[in-house]
Image (cartoon, rainbow, N blue to C red; front, top):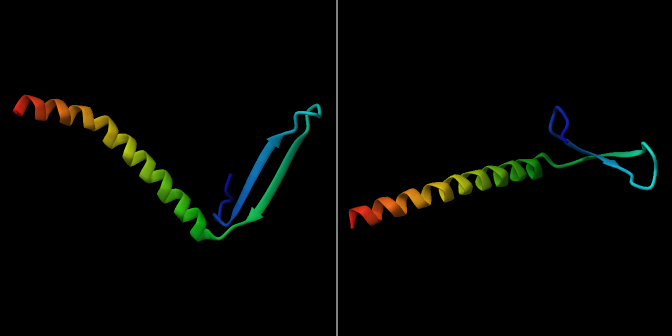
Length: 65
């Protein structure tokens, strides 16, 4: 979870050894790190889209040849 101003990362984890207990932690983080994370996520999405289009391209090339 990130804050509204994108300078803090937060995590909420359920503690297994306790009933209805959670651990909530937050930490300031360099905004550049978060921008690299966002760029990596976008690259992953773009790669998945290209993988989906690859089979269509292979079929098209096969038909052309």
